[in-house]
Image (cartoon, rainbow, N blue to C red; front, side, top):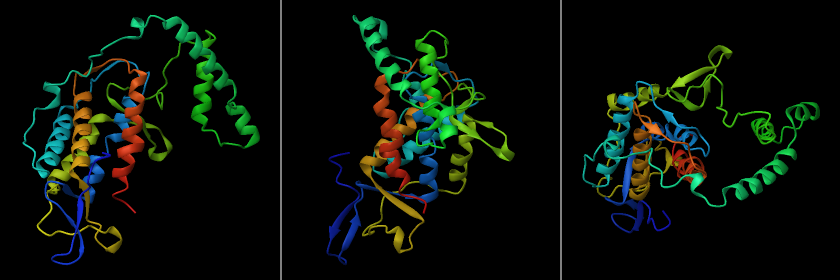
Length: 282
């Protein structure tokens, strides 16, 4: 991404402007871009360090296929060879290269981390403190996590993972949150994400290469129907969609997430995810 030349190059002809370059840019309908970034939040939550092992049990085969088809459409728009193999046939997402028990000084590391974690958690206000003071500068979920951590370290609880809502079953539901129709919590099925992709297919929305002499898309100049991203970004987006496709297919097994996944979750949610979301909306 650092070396990405971007989707535009300045030219003087046919008139002075920044123009899109075939093979270096992809034009995507705005509504379709919203669909493509839809799975980012759930994927980031599924990659959160410490998340327990899970085997997908939902009816998600169609969504997995639609995700991969959308990824290949991005690849085709930059001139890559498609179709590519469906990732569930080629990727073993459960494979790990090492386990915590392989670390020689595991006990010493655990004790050091436990002491640091306790000090950090005891410096956070409790929910009771926050309600009495009216100071909610600390996220209430952080306070809950600190309390869970202290109970775990003190041997008062065996709880080591908490979903965003206790109704969520990670085998069939999206783990990033629940809907609240009529004020009642309702978990979202993973498979329901397929509806947005099917809608895009029905409307004929898909990425394309830029036309000859197609100039920069300026949203502020009344061209909100399409967005443009670089081929590099499009390739990364395709890989993220395939990662999600592999992880949510029926029967897919993912082991407990290691802390090394943290940088990836941050990249998906606050890195390229934030960048791509900024291309649409108001």
